[in-house]
Length: 420
Ligand SMILES: Cc1ncc(COP(=O)(O)O)c(C=O)c1O
View 1 (spheres, protein in one colour):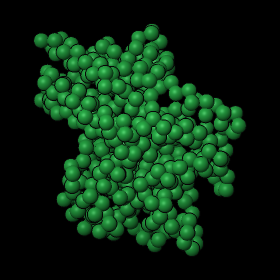
View 2: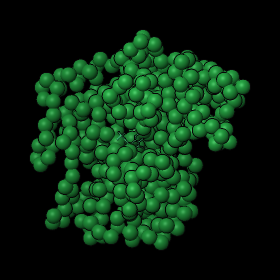
View 3: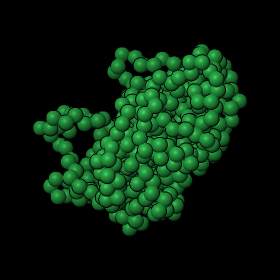
View 4: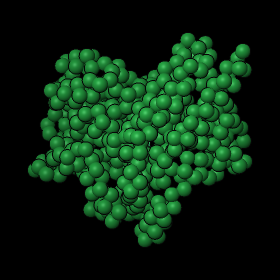
């Protein structure tokens, strides 16, 4: 029986049923018993450049020997951190951005949420404290993320909300958003949303959604945070989801794809408006008293630099764009399978949802399909209790996409056969 407490897991069963991965190469994982699995999710949407990248490991090793990390509080920092901030600012769709770093997406969301409140405080509007998020939105599991999440079960059981100044609106409901902004703009600090809802079930935006949200935020003087923890660094076939969907954010949160998970790293790109009172304008006492021990970690920055080199050199963002139709075609083969309801795809990610009526009668169905897929050599997981998660590494080939979908098809067939 394992002593490792898994995230989002029912340890009553997982403790005796772990899948222990030993090594990986490209899109293929190998477990401790020598079984191979195609990684249909790039772990948790992060291993975009694929596994086994010696060049990232070498860059990190060299950096760790030279200087593993140094404090970034006060005036201190390290060389790769400054270089990475410069590079991210250049890549940012927000003009003249500056960069605040942490160790992952939840850090980034907490940083952004605290920063927008601190911004309104230093510019003399401390009553603007509410952050508005979306139904099905996921923003990590720190205090702010748990308060902003739009997936009900992730909030329950803690004796109430951690942060009360949050409002959650329908996933595509710009009308309610407009009415809320009109009524309460004086209290609202920011709106946060994922360009494509990810963990909530791969829900691409309707065409008018983001231009309208951007317009509403401007009209009502509400800051816009694009949570690009999944969509950043190419997942939609554009470097940023904000570019694909015409979002004009004041802040962007990112993590995952910045290092492809070779080291833990995340951060916030901050535009001129929010940075100004802290960096440029003469605002007495305008200091953002926030930071993490590993903010600007040199080894993580080295991993990000090497990872970004690979993405650029191998044209991996363009590769996602060119694979988008192939993934869509392949995954839609599952539309006719027993139990399958809506199939949603965008860029190099997809969700295969189960029929709502079947799910209502049998909520364990998706997990059984995931287990069956594993037996057919495909590693996946369930999104929001209702869909199969697909987001393979960007280096997947069209043949491997077919192999992956064949594995899911066989798993669906096994589970349907067992129910007959
Ligand atoms: C959109 C989004 N924001 C934030 C997070 C939290 O990131 P982390 O798990 O690295 O803290 C995630 C993680 O999946 C995410 O998808």
